[in-house]
Image (tube, rainbow, N blue to C red; front, side):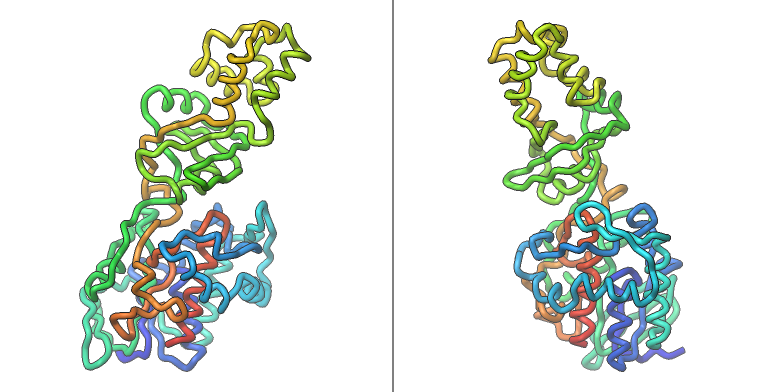
Amino acid sequence: MNTQFDVIVVGGGAAGLMCAWQAALRDKRVLVLERSNKIGRKILMSGGGRCNFTNLFVTSDNFICSNPHFVKSALKQYTQYDFIALVEAHNIAYHERDHGQLFCDGKAKEIVSMLQAECDASGVQIKTRALIDDLSVQNGGYQIKTDRAVFSTASVVIATGGLSIPSMEPTPFGYDVARQFGMPVLPIRASLVPYTFSGKLKEIFGRLSGNAIAATLSSGKTSFTDPLLFTHRGLSGPAVLQITNYWQPRQSVSVDLLPDDNAFELLVEARQSHPKMSLRNVLGLHLPKNIAQELLTLWFPELAQKPMGDCANRELRALGEQLNQWQVLPSGTEGYRTAEVTLGGVDTDALSSKTMESKVQPGLYFIGEIVDVTGHLGGFNFQWAWSSAYACAHAL
């Protein structure tokens, strides 16, 4: 067994495989160590099994990072169009969905097979079920002890991802390595994740489970307009997942249930055109009837059966404000169990934005989700994996 390598990549996911392939193209002897029984597991699970592999409209504004400029260099070095060209070169059919999201027509395994093929062709060695016992500095390079062998290398790339999706048995190994070498790790938490609620709101959302409407969710100065889904535990859907990147625990979220309308003006117009219709029935013209009923019962039960012609401006204004600016306080989120990403991670101030190399430990690199860079929903996190991996590989 060969135990001497130029580069060892820890983690056989999107970023790790991309980096390994690109480094091997530069005549590096590359080994990938993956602790699970197969590579690319998160790719296989993503996008409902079709892998939302990138987005047509990638900019630095699509990423959350303590240093908003950090992502620019890597994104410029390897763009979404570069990855699209790779997909097309492998004859993988794909299609565009809302907001520039690109998905495979077939299965996500096509992306994994593509990366596997490129790694194989370039001579990358991949070892699965590789459990690392220790990583240390030895003779100007690094030594990695696994349960099978001890490997030596000039450079180590940490591409272990975050802690989302417990079924994949993620570990904090990557964060521990950063701390081992004196690199700061910013607080981490589950993100792109559904909200949970307790008490009356949980009961209401449970009764509305399965309903979906277009809504605008806001946290601070950030807002997203996308589908909102009611669940047995709370709220989900793209609008919710997006806003969790910006939300802080114990913070309320503003929900606009009629994002295309001024609800008060809409109700005043309805009073003129349908004076004998009940407020509940009028609201049922603009929202699913069961949602309208539940919300009126929650907010203003005395108004539900009231004819529109009898409703005063103050009553309609109060209802309008609730419809456009409903303040809800989540109990929390569903956590890593259903989170798509891990927010936070290795502090970008400790990394080179051009190469992903540690500023304090030469030859040690961090790429992908382990870094304090989190993309919006819609293929941006995969693009960060591709771009950060490419930038790293071409600096090795």
